[in-house]
Every structure is written in structure tokens, then in C-alpha cells.
Length: 368
Ligand SMILES: Cc1cc2nc3c(=O)[nH]c(=O)nc-3n(C[C@H](O)[C@H](O)[C@H](O)COP(=O)(O)OP(=O)(O)OC[C@H]3O[C@@H](n4cnc5c(N)ncnc54)[C@H](O)[C@@H]3O)c2cc1C
Image (cartoon, rainbow, N blue to C red; front, top):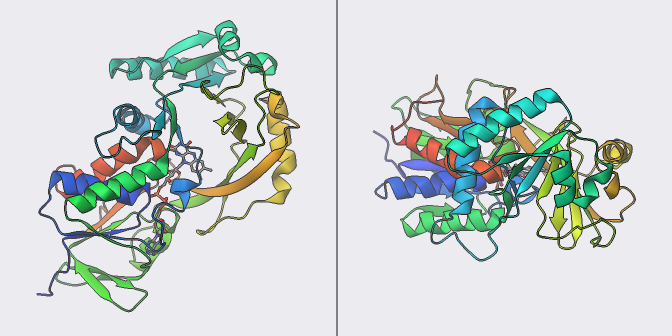
């Protein structure tokens, strides 16, 4: 029997991998865990390229409990992660133009209220009173969620990793997994770029946009998990250009004219909810996106048009066709686990998703 180097190897130290490590270490500190991260700074891909909004009301049925639990987690951060500024509880306004969307809002509001959150439906008039800049935005009504807000995702990655290490987990930074091994005796392993091989009965693929590549490397079934690029824009300070705009206002997301914006350092951080398939890596900004963004904003948030853009960037959201998270053991290949496919919800849902994967690894939940 081959010597085990670890009980569990986790590939990737973004929100997903660091959360799995933290939950595993809390649930069973006797396990020898290693987290392997290619970069020097954990969380330096999708986990730091996002809009950092905590959103409790989501539309995919399977994600509802994760979004609610994730929002509750951010509102009561555990000791060690609860650093000043980790979470700004400013609330959110999700706008609807269609009756069907409003109907779904009503269902989600009920579900969230049953779990102790306090969302409510606000009519057009009340929304405009709360947020005067919405005067030019077409919508019927909104779901207002006071417990939503803006988070510091890197604070969470660092907190998870610090907590996991305090319980004995090891973090190997600047270390890339370049090969995956599956032995006949049920031992799994990873080969690192420096030639070293590490063995463990369990390997967790938590490498964000790179998970599909790793799955292919290990001969695992393709479930359609793919990275998609999305752009974010940050304007120069513009509090005077947008009526009533301040750091205390909720972020605003138009569901039927997909786009959102929020306050960030005196300017507006906004997104036109573009998405196109992209290879894993650091995505470049597409200069041809300008007219798409302008048209979208003209329809949804004309108050943002013509504001000077200070910077723009793109990040990768990685998801399955159903948008359901990929958590737990591969149903047809024992020992391979996933904490992947967090799509556009990884900041909100990192903790419950990591907990779900950790419990599956420890045999407390069924596989995915
Ligand atoms: C534009 C944008 C906006 C978003 N806005 C929000 C939002 O407002 N709210 C929200 O909840 N979510 C949001 N998200 C989603 C959220 O950012 C992601 O769901 C989350 O960051 C995914 O985390 P991850 O750990 O799976 O991936 P990553 O953060 O990408 O981490 C994967 C890690 O694996 C490492 N890795 C990869 N391959 C290897 C290898 N071979 N060896 C070793 N290490 C490896 C990488 O270096 C990386 O650090 C947004 C995402 C984007 C792109």
C-alpha cells in the first residue's frame, strides 16, 4: 500500500478551496489537509475580480438555501473572520419589469423570511423615494433585502485559510498541480510543477475556471462546467452626478434589463451582465463591448451614461449549464471531489458551499 502524504488534498485556494479547508478543519481537526495554490496570493483570480455583492434572493431553486445561508453567514461572521470592513450591510434592490419576475420575487421573499431574513417587496414609488436616481429607470417594483450588502472577499479567503492553518491544515503557495493520478489501490495523487508527487485518498478540485481542465486530466466525466467572462466598470467619483448616491445606499440590480451598480470609493461600480465563454486565465477586457454596455445602460440605468470610467476589468464566472454548484464526490469516480461551479454566487455562498463539500468528504452528506 502506497504511503499517504495527506488525508485530503485541495487544489485551489480561492473562496471555494479555502472554505472547504476551513470547514474540514473545524469538523475534523485530525485530518491531514493540504491546500495547493499556484499563485503567491490566494484568491487572486475570480475571488478578487468580482463585484462582492451579497445577494440572498436568487432564482435557481437549487441555489436558494445556499444564498440564504451565505447571507446569514456574512451577517454574523465568526470570530477570526469578522475583521472591520469585512461586510457593509447596505441592502439590495432587485428591480423587476415583468409580472413573472415579480411573482418569483414574492416566492423568494417568503422563503427568505421563513429563514429569518427580512426582505420585502417595494412599489415603484417607495423605491424612487429610497433611491432618487431610479427616476429614469423602467421597472414595476423591487425586492428590497436589508441583510444584503457588499463584502470583502479576500478578507474571507484569508480568514478561512488562517482558521484552517490554526487547526493544522497546510497551505502550499506558488505550487501548481500539473498532473492528477489515480492508483489502483484507491489512492489519488497530484503531481506538482516542481516534479513532486503527493498522495491522498481524497483530492478536491476547487480550482475555479481550471476545474474542467483538471477533470479532463483525470479522465472525469464532462458535466459542461465552463468559464464565462464578465466585465466590471468603475467610474471616477460621481456622488454629485447621481441624485442621492452615497455609500449607504443599497446596490441596485435590474433583473429584467440585466445590469447592476453600486457605490465604490465615491464612484459607481457597474456591470452590464455580459457573458461569453472564455478559456481559463486572466481574461482581457474586450474593447468591442462598449456599444453593448451603452445600449444596456441606456435601457436600465441612464444615470450612469457618460460618467468617466476610471478602470475596467474582466473576471471568469464558472458554471454548469443548470447553474447548480458542483459539490461533493464524483458519482462515478471515488475519491475525486468537487467544490466548483460557484458561478456568480461564490462570494455570497462560499461558506455554505464549502461546508456542503466538507460534509460530503467526511461522509456526512451524499455525493453530488
Ligand atoms: C465579474 C464577476 C462578478 C462577480 N460578482 C459576484 C458577486 O457580486 N457576488 C458573488 O457572490 N459572487 C460574484 N462573483 C462570483 C465569485 O467571484 C466566484 O464564484 C468565486 O470567486 C469562485 O471562487 P473559486 O474559488 O471557485 O475560484 P477562484 O477564485 O478562481 O480560485 C481558484 C484558484 O485555483 C487556483 N488554481 C487553478 N489551477 C490550479 C492548479 N493547477 N494548481 C494550483 N492551483 C490552481 C487558482 O490560482 C485560483 O486561486 C463574480 C464573479 C465575476 C467574475
